[in-house]
Length: 303
Ligand SMILES: [Ca+2]
Ligand SMILES: [Ca+2]
Image: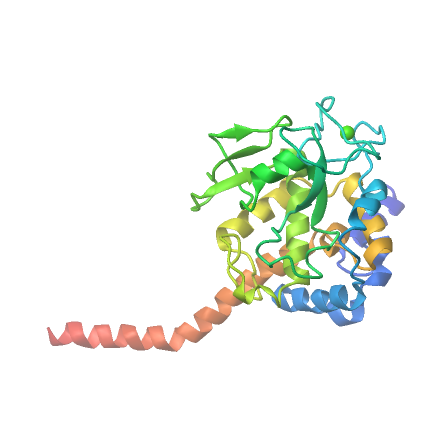
């Protein structure tokens, strides 16, 4: 092992300004000492202050740059997470000119804009509706099959798309509702996009209704769903396609997905955040529980 390699490893282990060339975007003086949901709220401020909301229509234009396939077949078609076949030729493709819906009756007819966080939940409001980092080009028919289902894991699918995306009852964790499971190649991409959404819009979720969310500003997502997202984030690390998309997104709407830049922030926010909350709860419950135990003890002595 040479010295240069050791130095690179040491740098990549620090949370600070050396971990990524995008470090200038983040105000490390204000976030270096933070963890848990304080880090999340500090990042939210940065994402909000730098975000230039673009029109919903212009997404279709930027996709021709941001989502062109330079990673899988490298054939200039649009990467669609609901039809891309990461390990074999695609069954159908959307080219630069022909990708926009249109009517569709089956897979492969046309592509439209998929809100990974369903737009019906936030009543199509701005800037969520046109936020590049959670709205992706996908096949219209598969998009419609997903509808507003949560993402999840399915072992007994009632429907499977051409690339292997599934619809069926969730089998991961306690939730037993119907879910949509993307292929493994895109599980991390989708998790990081949804976790971005939870940072950027943490102050908007209080009154929204959906099984995915718990309506708190801190955790944002329900425990069962958060567990799946963190699992997917770890199993499918940041890809070259995501790195490229994040750079194009930055030139497009002037903010970034921090979890693509610093994947370790998923743990720093949600794992640490949950730990800190448990600790606070135990501290609060501490004296009360002691009192309850004492009362129980006295009662049993009287008997
Ligand atoms: Ca392709
Ligand atoms: Ca991936």
